[in-house]
Length: 342
Image 1 (cartoon, helix red, strand yellow):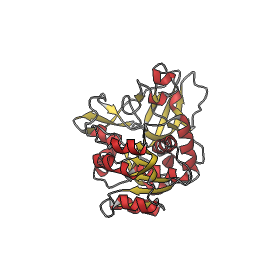
Image 2: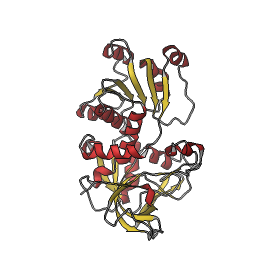
Image 3: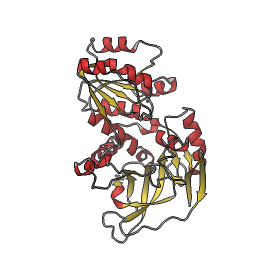
Image 4: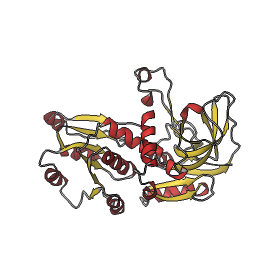
């Protein structure tokens, strides 16, 4: 069996290992596909060395098939198609007791704080599993987790039909937020520097703007008849975006913080005061978001075949990371079993 591990010093190792048999309340998954994301890049770049324990088998966007079940498992059967909601909460902290266990104050994010999905056979707690319908392809199902992020963000923003929505940053999450917001009835514009990404965004029927080619504030004034957008999602992680895109929001509009900012950012609080704006943070997802994501993928609302740039075998996970680092892909999947795309 093969696994990919971050071993520290910005190094990845692909090696053989002996899989762990499931305990009473555990399930073993034969992992099919794993998507790589920005968090995985942060891990490999060493940006999360204070948090992760090495060696770490990373990866948390996945699909697979139940291979074996523990002695006390009743809800799952060998052969079930599954994905994993990679959140392990304690159930006792103030956040959990308030019903917000997805942002548990002692959260174990699986694939970061504990071993993840880039392994041939992965043994997990049964409560992390989410069942997939037989009608969904395992390839497409590897996008359930990032689509769930977008669903959670759009729901938390309370996007309504007819809302004017601007998304700053057209990477995988920004694009998915745009598609999900459109499915909720919003009128969407995505602002993205990279021309290749803009071409893909436009091919999916969304408006893509280059911030260097237009005056964005002027565009928004024309688009909204000077009102401003109802909601802006900041997904780029750029300090200048945080500073300036708040100028696009209407009176009592919403500024949604999606990107992870490792450093404090300057923000125009006078603008927040003057227009009575709401600033809303969004993080991960809840169980219902996974259900919605599966439905959106299964009914074709999310065009997974266009979002997935390429599929590489587990033995080439290092090459996949390099491609992402160069900004040459929207989404790369790892074929963990190295059997080819099915």
